[in-house]
Length: 378
Ligand SMILES: C[S@@+](CC[C@H](N)C(=O)[O-])C[C@H]1O[C@@H](n2cnc3c(N)ncnc32)[C@H](O)[C@@H]1O
Ligand code: SF4
Image (cartoon, rainbow, N blue to C red; front, side, top):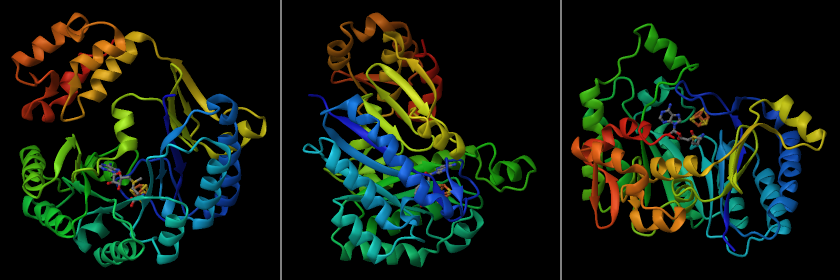
């Protein structure tokens, strides 16, 4: 039986970072106990839906899962271990903020069989951390790293952001130098997105953000790729780099459009030919579950055309690209019969290339992926 991925959302943070629009509430720890009860209630609704289908990966994300007491994480995982088929689990990840990770929490995670930790570092400069609203300093990152090593965690990811206000190329190379010298096996290297409804968006609108210009931002990306490759990392997804054997299995499942269930506020699911998404409001989440309903706020049937488009759009995020043979196996048609025109157009303008039975973005295509994507929409 084909397995699924399970995403669990923990929507709490100590404080909102100035750039972030993820579904999370700052300082509402009074809601945690109730939220976890309802989260388990939601998970219980899946007993009939997924039955004995194996859960292959679990990703506990947020918000900041490490900012709540570890007993809650244990409660949720124990419930899953007791009620679902977890015999084929390959990976259990959790996101942590260096300002909220403690030795007690990390060792509790280990006892709960969590085997991958993702640390949000963003930059290795204290001044910049303060300017983007982070609650931690660089020293907290080193402290967290030592805690993880002490607890025997070896599968560690670090999130970095480039293109931050007042950041120069030498700053981001310095960040990569710090992280790679610690032999961290997985690095997410994100380009800053100035999201609407964030303080940064307002500052940007008012001309108060000194962001790197577009050329510098792209240089940060490509020099970052070069640097990481020179340190033995494989660039396997637009923003992700890993040492051999350390790619994130859960995220790969999204990029390959395999089935997954998301539980908790604002999470998404894609299973049994349907996509649906949960409400992002606490009161609605609690109310719908009180009524025995799924806490969703929308759903759609994924028809074949849409699934093929998603398979291509997400598949192109992977540096290896789309496997032509696998496309045929999955959809029963050649990718050229469906998307021949798009592939030809973007091969001519050097955004796509075909190599060894795969269609992938070129170096130039990595910068202009959105131009390719739009042409695949049904
Ligand atoms: C849920 S957070 C990680 C865990 C934890 N909340 C933390 O921040 O330490 C996921 C990651 O998304 C990235 N991120 C969030 N907002 C972003 C934005 N506007 N632009 C680029 N990266 C962003 C950050 O690198 C962040 O670490
Ligand atoms: S980046 Fe992480 S800590 Fe900051 S607000 Fe977003 S989810 Fe919370």
